[in-house]
Length: 194
Ligand SMILES: O=C(CO)[C@@H](O)[C@H](O)[C@H](O)[C@H](O)COP(=O)(O)O
Ligand SMILES: [Zn+2]
Image 1 (cartoon, protein in one colour):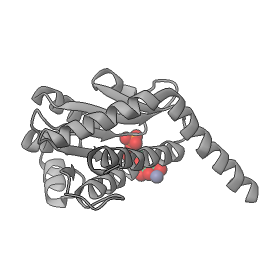
Image 2 (spheres, protein in one colour):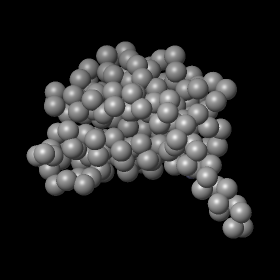
Image 3 (cartoon, helix red, strand yellow):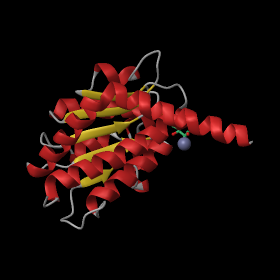
């Protein structure tokens, strides 16, 4: 088990290193887009399944409450939290529409849709991105994979930050890392006095 621990740790670090090597410019670009959305009166709408649903909620909480700096609340909403909305859409229509219908209800052109999917192929995330595009929102995906980087989301999003790994847990660990990093960059750019 000690070998498993050290191997797992090395592979997790390698996933993050490979991601940064490929995507450092896109991380900075996304931080600029998020800052612009907040400064221009828009909001983040964030969604994903399973562990990525937890990420969506985690990230929204960092922006609405605070990350490292006490400052005004920033508008970010996870589309994964209202069980009445989620179950009624899934029950009456299909699970594929649970995020898309919320995007149609809440999304404005000045908003940014942030979809989180380790495969890039989850149909409900894809349909939400299509809905966001129709509204004229910026569309960004955090994804993973090596054979088809970005999966189905690659073709329909304005920006895809892909973790070049085939391990779902290590992709998720990298997503959480970059989500925290984005919070730190945006907070510093908007609120740090020095
Ligand atoms: O957390 C994990 C696996 O580590 C799972 O809950 C995982 O998020 C779920 O299987 C998701 O449904 C996977 O969806 P996606 O990342 O491919 O869009
Ligand atoms: Zn997980």
